[in-house]
Length: 359
Image (cartoon, rainbow, N blue to C red; front, side, top):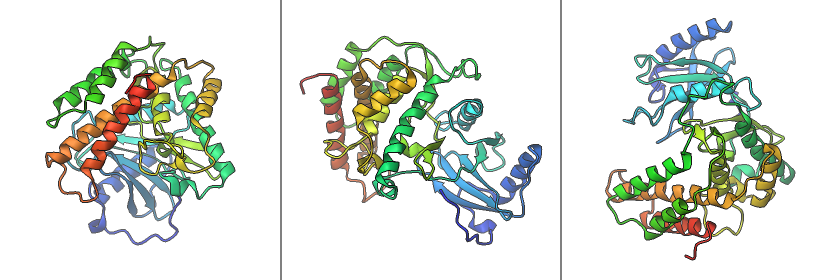
């Protein structure tokens, strides 16, 4: 996410979809004035992330100031699925804590500005390590430090006193795993194509062996290395993508991170070429040990939470496969439906294996 020293002249007609340059310039100018800052000259917008999830733009002015703007996808989405106010509220609440988050500039709820709510935050200059190739631009020692920092920052999130920072009423506190199991089982039951029986078997095992929950903590919901920004030493300097944040069992975050923490030789890859495939990253048993030390608690049966996260990913991908087969996702020659259906089966089998089932 380093800046481009060549800044072309801004042209309103060249603005990316979902951005009204004039309207955002006026709004951001007013927001910066309230904080004692200013916008210098025209604004340039560069989309750096997006697609079917929330869109992120780097915003720069002629004075060298930079910000990041987040808004929902430009297509039709459910109002609760991409709630900008939730992300803004969480990061604002975390500002005085040990959790590294970008400073918030402001939240715009007036949909007449760009057609949807959005918020602007400070630009954090660092690297989002999205894949193995990016990870390999760092040396082995830095990759190890990166892995350790990622785990330690997850513990920082779970150390947050939700009442003290004003998030005690952010969501329901009890029954997080139980609610998630019901929700995703309903989703797979609703697909038109036949559901893989391994998904059903894994669900039954997860329900039967559900552990007792401890006190509710802040749950990021999608915590992994590529949802952070790291500096040149591998330290996490910002945690991003809080759109799935809720309250619940913090070990759900740990289980999800372990699911994505793919290492060489793993049979199932949850993400294509994830960064942790590169040499130098810590192994999953080290992830657990470092988390326990940083969190000051034993995680108990962490395999259950990894199984739950793996099963949930299988459910999500099952829905994607179903929508492609139904033609609801358009034509995408790069998406091999049968290959992804096989991945759903493999993930469901892995979930069963993690909870000790004989698959």
